[in-house]
Length: 491
Image 1 (spheres, rainbow, N blue to C red):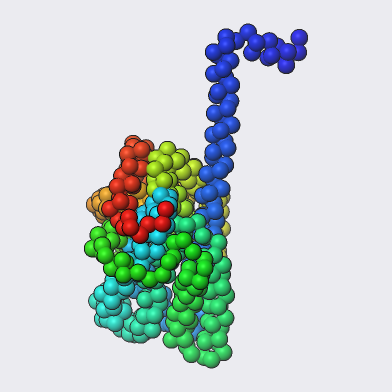
Image 2 (cartoon, rainbow, N blue to C red):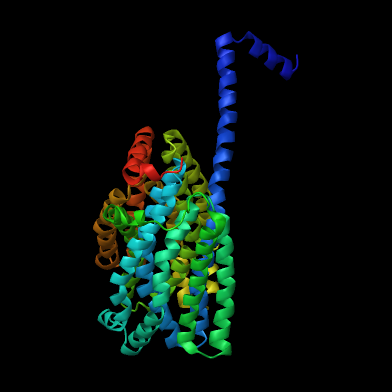
């Protein structure tokens, strides 16, 4: 008797109920595979273009620094300080506040309350524009602030001059970030990628023209980033109002001025949540700079952070994709769909994270050559590579779970979690290991990773696992009822 015949005979002898259950299990396995594939396509429809868009936007700042570097060391340092300290603080806060739209627009789109997406975006424009006005002193008095932080006078003065020339960039954030989230929540991510590509090409050309051809110096380099980001902003606005979003953009409305305080509350919670994460690794660099003979450690850490930031564009795209998918499903009243979207996002991101984790471990003594030829720096980079690998691995999970929080509207809770994990546990543990146990930059980084990032990831994981998704779907309906104007909805 052949194996096939034996197998057929065995199945024929199974009781009817057992045979039926076996067929059900096979069907469920096939359905699970099909559902995973369908959800992955929906996820990558957002994540793929988002990765490109984020890398293109980040590259504009890198290109500006590269052109400034050809002008001199002081110019490079000045624009780096302006970008990372002044613009970096501003960028993180406004980007975080704009992420409130991922909750509201995502859930409204899932519930087919299309008209409200345009209203939410206009409210975000108003709130973020007011915040831009309130943040003006950060740019206008950048020089004295940098001097208070211990920067040399010449560097602080030049950085302050650059910061003032970046004021148009500052105000572009208030319009561009809401536009991106408004389009992203409708799964219109491909137009965002195309506009980012055009803006990047314009930026490269304008940087060459102003810095090398017209010899406008550092101010010219700073001016190009303003021009390019406004090209990006106006491109997204033009697509939105000239037929790209016929159902979700129906023109300007006075309704946008209603409910601003509640909108500000959610935006502030979102901004605080992401800022606490963004500032955490900046504190790592500041703490390392206070070590004895810190120059080599800071150089090596900067190389590792640059690698980490490049790779972080992928998890941040998953952050955006997960937020949109969870919000869409909850808005549609599909709690199980939101849970499954979370599972697919986490699994996919972790697989990518494991790949880069292994890549860093294999190239631990090689990737430093991209940035330096100094043996001391390269040895320190090699020494820190293990921590870099684990940071990348943790970052493959943590942003996805933060995306779940944004899609579900948990920003205020996660802000408290971030505050506790990062600044009550992580920073003190980094100080303890770095100074008390004399482990230097390795100890500071290890303490902040395993004390802060790992703890925060564990807490968010437990919250996500224990979440009652059907209850969250019901809560999303109540949330939409609270925010929407029923008379104006387009069903």
